Length: 178
Image 1: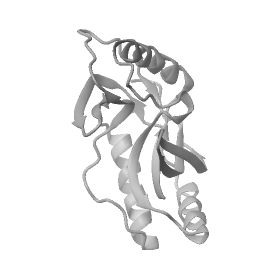
Image 2: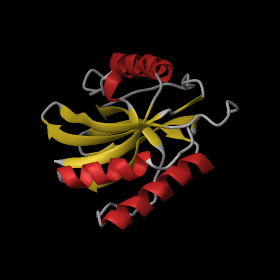
Image 3: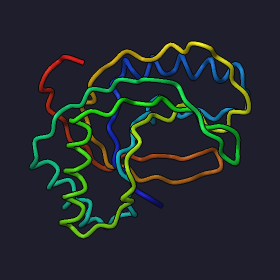
Image 4: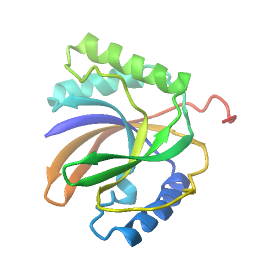
């Protein structure tokens, strides 16, 4: 099993994403769609953690006041995988997201937890295994703020990944302009 840390999406954005998922499902019966409660934006992949490491990580995260970043989807994009295409919503980077990622990496380094150090490509996966999908102008979700950061365990199953929340912290809403 693997773990990851993700920004959780507000319910309204999740509901709007399900509209896109429905369009994908109608044009590609083979598509595997993440359940609404599984929609998130991953910011770091990390190995499975011991109980002590989880507690230390969330304790340090809770001690830091982090901003609630704006989530603005800029496009519907896709990439080829061995099982068809993966569709995702590209999310515009912003200083608040970058601050959260930098803070997370500093904490992981301080605890001695190894993680993937590649650059974060902010996105929300909305469908896997899509054989075909044609849409000229997708209706993107309205901009919003992510208010929660969650540590997950991830298990790959025959039906796709299953993400189990382990711990969460609330993010501080500093402003409402998006």
